[in-house]
Length: 310
Length: 274
Image (cartoon, rainbow over all chains, first blue to last red; front, side):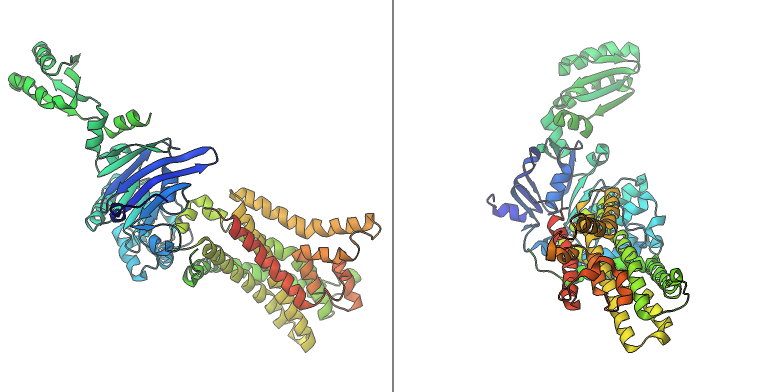
């Protein structure tokens, strides 16, 4: 066991030197991670990067080959596993719940197993927008409704830490908005959320911090902004202007940033260091209204993901 | 290892039991038992040119040969899906991430299915007993009660094997194949194999230990439990009639059956991985 510092006990999740080997395969290969309470934390990686193995270990489904895992200050396995598990909510990827139970019965079943009060179940259905479908058998549910029922199940028992694996699969845009609004309410109450998604654009706008996992190791961890600074991927500037103004703008931008803009059908496009943002604005200011439009495109999470996990 | 708790076991058991009541599985199986039993009671002697109820001993002997095919099959089909089904729909990880141990989940599944199977067995054959009431003496009723109890035990033993299969198999299709193969082996092949060895060795095979080999098959244990001393029905029991009296003690045999219920579950718990 790695030594546990007082700081890691105050973390919602704390991983120290976590390894998981399946024979010769090192699915998780030395992961250290601290996630403070109330954080919305994203976990991204290619299939086979070790995401699900890490998830399963944090849930106590798999024992690590080496290292220690604390969830809400307690080890997830062992003698106190029941107390530790009551702090957790989990929504697995693509879970199929029981077709012959209705929505409310499904929640009753999980509430009993979690030791959560049964009278909370109707309110939970309401929270995920399924109050009208509580008496309908799950077999009649659409994919989105099943996903929402799965989410309701994870919220039973007021968990302190939520593990959500691809939770927005099958949800329509409105449901995705509602889902993240619910997460923000929970966060405000101190709930920690660990979330995975293949839709990086969706996570980019919403997570506080995230970790990029590849080959069983954390390649980078931080907020989207911190990762941007660290990866050094360029800023893309697009300037819309008349062709006769381009020459002047091109020289001004080149002088200000040291990068040569390319001419496009609508004006200019420039790739430059993110630190040159103000220099770009200053170079374009003298052109005034001749600049018809201006777009600054920050490197997206997707760009960083491919840069860091390749 | 955390201490075992009752609530998770009963929660899972209640769900499994209610599922089987709701989709009318219990009712259907009970009706199958009742109808088959009545047909056997009244027409079982048709090959000997007799139609109508003969004797309770004869009826039980005929029922034993019916039950020995039917109950293992029903129990295996009931249980093979228990764990592998959850695994395939992705809900096993969810269940195991709850405050429930693998043993509690396994016992909950087993007890719920066992209750459904036991209820349909008792209801199905119980109804027959009610209908045949006027033919039954107190002794006959006692024998019939023994038959019903041993039928329940037979079902529980094969249900236990089914749950073991469900833990070992990684896919539903493979589990169903294994379940059918298990049925073939214990119900059709095992006795033939023993008989074949006995005949080819001129009766020398395994010597006195031969009867003990029958204990390796819960279906044979069930037969032994139901053997009567009556000469005219002994022939109906095949190999089970070679069992020495010392082995025929119902308590001993009940113990063997209990082992057949417990051991596969112990193995299942040992091999049960998320």
